[in-house]
Image (spheres, rainbow, N blue to C red):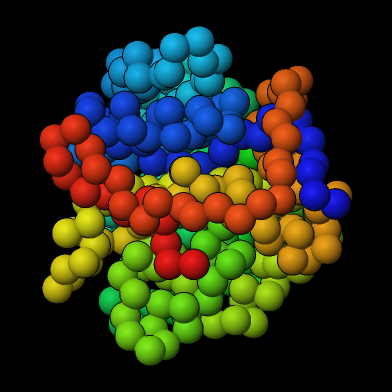
Length: 335
Ligand code: NCD
Ligand code: ZN
């Protein structure tokens, strides 16, 4: 098969950043995605309905002419988020709230320290038909970084899912067999997003033969057995797993640094990279469900109706992108 046409996909997890960067990131995503769930980890974070609405306006203003692309807005949970904040967000059309354990990843300093006190907020999300999106890693420094996702499942995820049985939960950017197994056997209303880098790469691609900072993201790449487990679940066609690129641009000098930051900017090539994975797995017939159906179904949104056609041909992804202010960004991880 050298060409496939599928319903236009959506990206259920990405980072657009703000201001001038939007004129780079929004067109990159609108190129082949109809909707995208926009992460709220700006500085300061998008914690309220009002902030989400103004951020949405800035995103819409950065769409290419004629684009029908629509951002799906989220708010950022902190220790101070109240039930009223959730009600206000619902009224403003915000569909989901993102929970970052404090310090887990880029711009998560204002994240949640005490999960226990957030249960009324989780209940409010469920009562209002909103989703809880979770960055599922513990932040305890004594826990090995490669085990932090598994630890989060054992310490928190099981409890959240059980204690709020009517809450829809997305386990974001899963990276381990344990997470895939957890989602597969969880109650209804639990799903996961998977990034292109976690399907295409494992930790050897980050550390073997030299450190490759452009392959550093969080949760960090794991050993190949985990990569294989993720590839197996997308090949299975389970509707619990859907596309979320976690596209997360950073200036080149901030990644190539003594203490390089986490995040891979994949928007310019994400759909093609996922397609490559499904092709390698001899499962191109499962791409459309993963990319275009299961996320919309889980969020309770209509499926898209337009189509996109993917053609098999070689293509050099640009490795750098220069912004109008001269700043250099990396376009893709090393692949
Ligand atoms: C993301 C970012 O840069 O905002 N980085 C990353 O490594 N994925 C944050 C996140 O989703 O963890
Ligand atoms: Zn992310």
